[in-house]
Figure 1 (cartoon, rainbow, N blue to C red):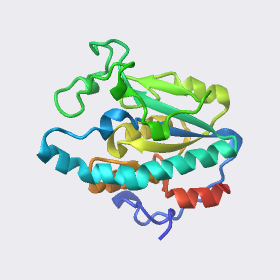
Figure 2: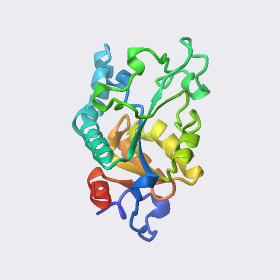
Figure 3: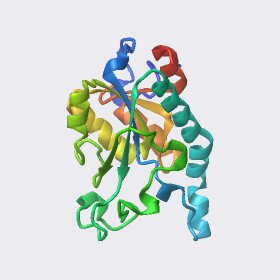
Length: 223
């Protein structure tokens, strides 16, 4: 099974295979979402630490290495690598969107200059690369990224990052609504659980984006 037949939801299980991906490198950018220090921290609660260990393992063994390799491959071809992160501009977080203020796990208070809000060292931006700071789930609605991509002549956005079912998905849907061609790289993304990751890929595939592995994408693009 390849990307044309995988990740099918109920709505698209009998749909014809999509056309071959043809990505003009000059019109393509890679966007990495929210791979920040706060998500690599281990909880002091042993139960919570154990509950999140599968996520951390996927990040260590799959997502971070695959994303790093893909970023380097894009850079070598002169393709822009763009980064987005969640962070509030005010230390008390009043500028956050409602989704970032609601009680529960998603209630993040990450001042922009805090260590927790910074991108992890392994995927840190290279000099001159664009970093947008958002107080929303979507990197498009919460920043001037739409204008940046338009000014750069970008039509294809290759998506990586976390969490598949939250900020990645929100950004994918926003980009699709603006008629960008979106490609989500399976092994460069993660959700809290592998099941959530897989289900969300099935939900967004074929309508909002095309889901593909990094190996398939690199073959298609000659990276």
